[in-house]
Image (cartoon, rainbow, N blue to C red; front, side, top):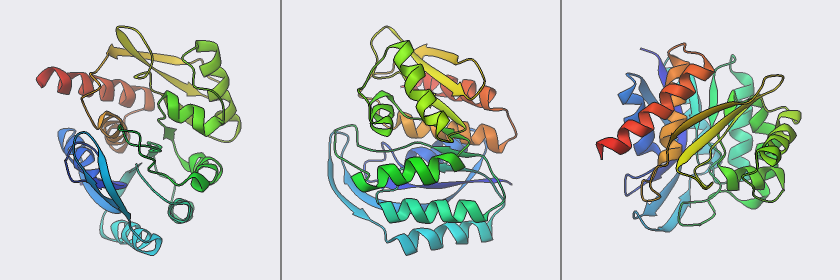
Length: 245
């Protein structure tokens, strides 16, 4: 069976990180293999401490996962350091092209930084162009573009265009931080009109939604579904999880 390689950090509360990734992939009938980038001590309210894995260890895990399994797609979450970003990009460049979904984890829900500041430019220039899809929320989009956070459609289009012009293949800008009764995620692809995906606004207390969304999309791509179909199925999965709770 094809696997999705998850490159991300752990969350001791089980609310986010690899715990969410693995359960989401399983829900889509896809197996997971792992490269752990960080061990975090978290509750559902706060991040108490973060211990980053050595870049050598992260790289070795990734190479071992490729050696052991038939990897059909990759989901990337928390990376933590500039050197780890570089190592991940190096391995991806060596592999045959695969669907890669990057959830650019820059901070926790409680506001703690989870990616070193010097790594942001490296992620934008070296890693993001290697990914099939990048899934920033509104604050992350602002940080990645160096601009002010906005929910304006015109500004979103401009910020997305800035990243697409830098070589990013596709962006799914998540609208969970915007106002309104419905959450609207917008898919931007070079040369294509933006596509809007609406869904119920999930409560802020529901953690790990970014992890689940990116993993669900990666699962769809691993199964051979197209990008639009994978995004739509992922949005439906998140809505169903919220209703089930």
